[in-house]
Image (cartoon, rainbow, N blue to C red; front, side, top):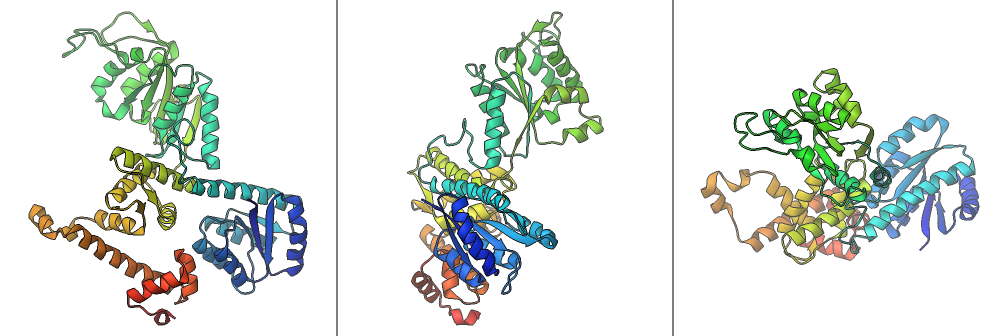
Length: 469
């Protein structure tokens, strides 16, 4: 299927030139042009546009305002802004508001083609991810990791390259971004992958026990040491040891860890003979180790031993195009976890999930999906289930205080669900019609409904579109 490129610019001479040149430069790309903003918006409502090349200065409406309207209609469309040299600051603002890139006028055709090819590739990946929702295999992605964005593909390349080495790796990223999954992928693809990876959660072990857990101890070496203990380094001999959240390791243990890495040997607590080890070290952290070094709470020489190569796990804010795939994967996993028949998201629900901010990253997304499944009696999860989760998460105030209050607040399931859906529908229509100033055709486009269907819903709610004009 050919990709689609729409160009909106009030310079008709430029439109005619691009309409003639670009089909020859861009294979299998259908090029459409218009000099009117309203006509361009109508085209975007009527058909799927892969890339929009948009002039930042339009006589009817500013490019920034037009960008906002375009994103309301189709949040997935890839937008490239055109601007004169003096408008670069505005173009940067447009990128911050959702545009993919910008190009300055006058431009050379090869430069424009290069930018458009990158935009078309991004659009292809996004559409591919959307289309894969229903065909997502059990282990989509790479070595258990999910995502097809450029950032994730770069991460996969790093994992593949490091799997062929024995270098120490430091994995950095926010909480909930899958640092341990990346470590497991490196291990499983390496020559050590036949043996299990050993993981130690550094902050979970008290300081006075961490040295013994890592390096082992001899019987009688301290109170409570009733027998010899091998330790995690020996358990991981010939394999990989993941030091999870290395930033929390006490300074007293850092010195002994550095010695073990330098000498490739360990000495158990209370032992008199060192023992050689063959262990690959992978560390992970969500902390600013450079600041900890300045504060003298993390050894600089240990940092360089651990940080031979660094991998960064992106937050969901950095890979928004992967959120639909991750949400769908989480949904399938939750259905298996609860032994439920497979469920799917409606397009509207998936768009809403992709639009939202997820500061807790995949972990937060997974928990949100779990709660949505509990509120979904049918096979399709829609906006009603999102609203139900939000109301349930808002707090216990509505349910009364104490067990007695909670019991008295519980209503029959179907009655409660119907009331919730009615409240959601009323709020949604108020927002939708206010935004579109009562324009039912535009509102239907934003809601991804037919005009007739939306009119029926408006009528059921006792609303009149003319009241919003």
